[in-house]
Image (tube, rainbow, N blue to C red; front, top):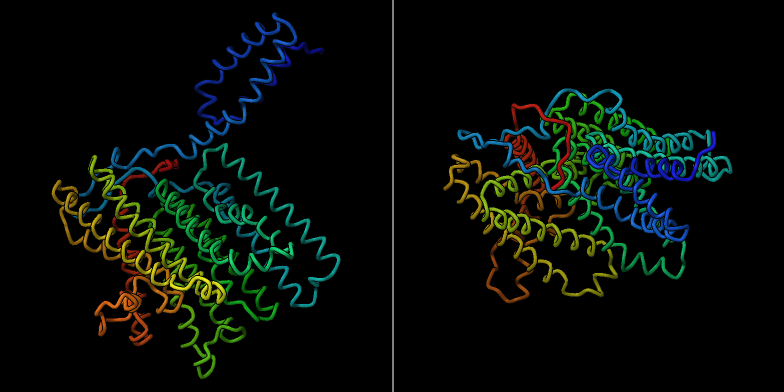
Length: 518
């Protein structure tokens, strides 16, 4: 059947309308279709040039319009819990109807959440096959296979990204956050292929780039957790698990591949279980428990077969395994309870209008400044050239960390006093614990590094000739203390902070599977 121009244009515009979010289509599609039909008929009556000008205008405006509407879905202002929650007067816990628990997610969506972990597990499988002598990284077959697999994974990831975007970022989509982030940063590897830039990049840019990536991850996890806490856990779990690959240096291929394969399969199973159970407490326990199991495997591998054994150790043993495992386990746990702490502070702020807004922002800004100073400090510390070029950076970053600490304390005291005054929280002890454990977020994140890297540090202020001699070297757990006591206290703080984060954000009401960006 022959199709005339008006019908063709109408079908084309109907297809274009399907690119908009479904909620937008439901509300405006019919009206927009009718307006387009009337305008195209009018332009066609004025001649070909008028019709062409009309179509050019429509299609030139299309990308901006699509980005605007999808951006609204992704970044729109959140329907804050202050509109739909109440603070339990006896305990200070929040009850809400968003992002806490609910009916089990379908098997199909749960498996979608674990799919990127299965893709990463394939890298472990290839390493295992190479270690067993069944394949070789340098063989033509392997090069072709790895190239085809990489292209396929990128295309699948892009397709899932568009699908999740169209579905308004359902809960399972959070499991793909790390995969999409890796794909987005992959082009940076091209810098290593440019000889004139590779050394410059490695010496001067790489450290700051890693600091930027870590801060970007922190921002993403906070933002996702602000929408839906279970989504925050799903986004954090693969990122936590990825950090353990640092223990695989100098490990033989068969063992490295076997542990990587089994670990990522376990992570995928945990992702599916989190969505099937669909409860905050279970999600937190599964995230920490999964990293407990795979972390011990990676730490054992690194101590007995790799290059992570400390030079002062008499030899590999389980004490050294725990010495390698526990600090990192404490550090990555902050990716779970940190965003939950920040979310609760934020929601208290939104309950106190209008002064609570700047109070909670002041407190979170203080935590952010402490994170920035510590992350940048550790990044520079790992590059000898930068430490020489940027002399005095420790003092500057230390002052920044002290400033962050001060404004966090000021903001938190103000918001806590206001919350108690307005009887939003009747138990001040809960707020005191919240403030104490919130301070543990930047310190806990640095637990995986030597304690003398932590900021703020009193010893660095000696450069200003302050009479601070006799004080501890740093504000947190310091190298003068026995290592066992430092780690033990760190584990206790981590477990207590995790319990408090779950307790404060617990609810008895079912949650809808929706996302409300902040």
